[in-house]
Length: 570
Image (tube, rainbow, N blue to C red; front, top):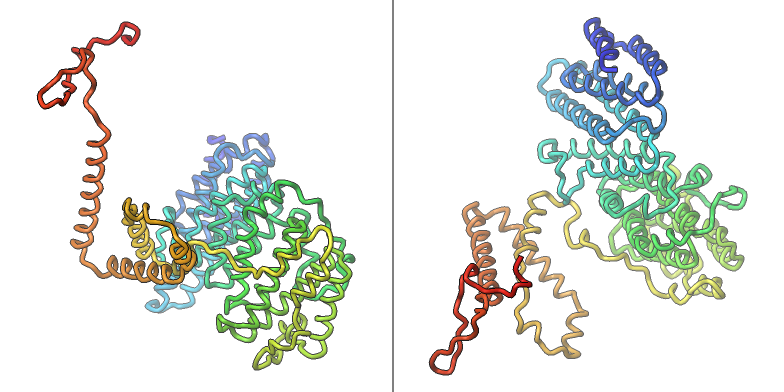
């Protein structure tokens, strides 16, 4: 196969047939249709290697090669990509990174260049390369069986740079904030392509923690576009019955039954997944709603996320949790402790109204539907800015404030608990306010630099174990009260963390090295003490030798002079 493909590649190089590449595409179509399916991956590998040799060629030449690669991947039979799947994706992602680097380099030289039009032309050419690579990744991922596709999803997710986490594949310091965002956008776009059509029977297998945790970290970025991409990836994975098209657009759906939504009974595996990761999902929806740069599309995708969770993963317990989440969002918009703009507050109110209208019809509870419909009807008359059909229109008039005391305009927990009273729903939990679970991300600044991360890691490692006297402290009512009241401790922890960060940012290198050396010496001394307490000289087989003052001593005997029983000798 190598001897067959190599002359074609050489011919295309010598005659400059990569730009335009119609002839090249025709040649590889003939090759792909002329070979057996199990040999397709050999051709793909040859084109990838050829792409590596052209890593410094013009953007249009590289785009031509990538488009030929896209054609070969699209023709390749499913499952015929062989054992080099990750190698193929690694090569594609490497060229994606290089294209972003070239684009940013051209952009930085734009100010000093006399021909601005030519620089912009090269930038647009790089965008062609990037889009071709993303499409190739999507087609390639779509040709994989589900178990390999899950592996590729994990592989790509590991390449996405996330602030505050170690990133071994991309040097985000060199490419800067703009380059980092560009890489994040490109990789998440490729993940959307790979996850499209992905159907997993178990959410635990489709969303393992090594994939879910970094994905949710990106969902908290201060960039609305990145948060939109994360939600679209979640929709691809969670929506196993293709209901998204029916839910497109945030609105008050008058008749949900007319949508003919497909669903199945919740499996035990999915119930276990929601018990383990449900709070994590709710938390990121809650935090994602209050971002000040949210636009119409963000609220649309958040509504679709809640609706798909209800369809795919909601049993009676999850329904109660989703109602609690909705009430918490309503209270957040009313109290406005975050000083959110009025447009965001009204957008949250509209989201809650649209979702509770959908949920009430999905669970087919007439009293609940009646309560939700009554609130929506009153809003139509007195507060249309609290409904999605009005607030997301251009130039929608906004109120100066939201009247918290006008109870009829808001969904009431007591009324909903009364509607759901009966078998199946634990309405007592509705009276417990939803509070997002606290994670490590809350203790650290969301936009951490890598220096801050290293400093915090050193701070954590430098914490020594408590003394025995502290462990032996008597447990009383006062100590338990202090343990519950963590406000003061959190303030002390933040101040201590700030001091450590400031020290590692401003202190001389010699001082930091001396500090680390002293910690290492202390550790060695402690280990030496432990070894002295645990290591004893070997006992003498000849017995115990008596010495003066009534003490006994076990003389140290070399091992080769010891006499062991026959059964112990090998």
